[in-house]
Length: 166
Image 1 (cartoon, rainbow, N blue to C red):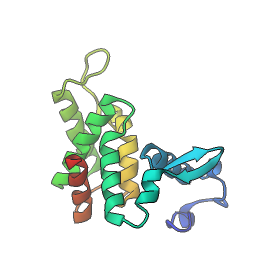
Image 2: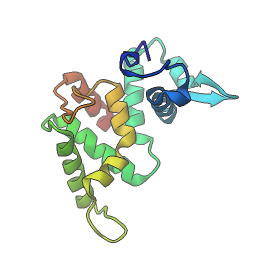
Image 3: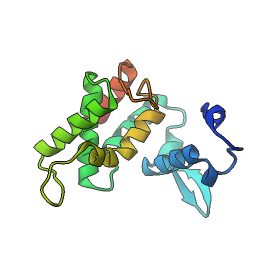
Image 4: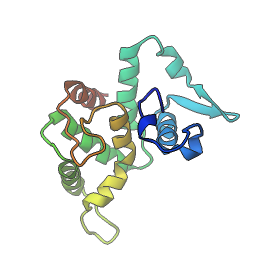
């Protein structure tokens, strides 16, 4: 919490994962991305992560591949790819704009609700929870907690392009 600058905005000691939601989410995200695993209650680096400790560019590409390919469901994968396309293009400025664009794209790909209705932005938001968390943790969005989430940072666009190429 201290290292990432989150402690100043957190109430409490921030010394236990179960009482510090940002740390819990970061750990779960790192596990989903294949950076760490739990063995006998301890967090350990995966073999891939160990190989990349002294290779920042390799780690960056590993994360780009992981965000594009590690999903629980095909709908999450498609939503993430559409979000990455929007981030790479760098044309959207608000979170609602991203959700609207991804919602439109999912509809064009044939995704709908069980009743056949188009996917609303709040449904799309649920599909993008993991991807958005990773992008926020990587600092790709300029305003991670406000209503704006623009991607004017060139490194954010480059990351999205690398993920799309993987």
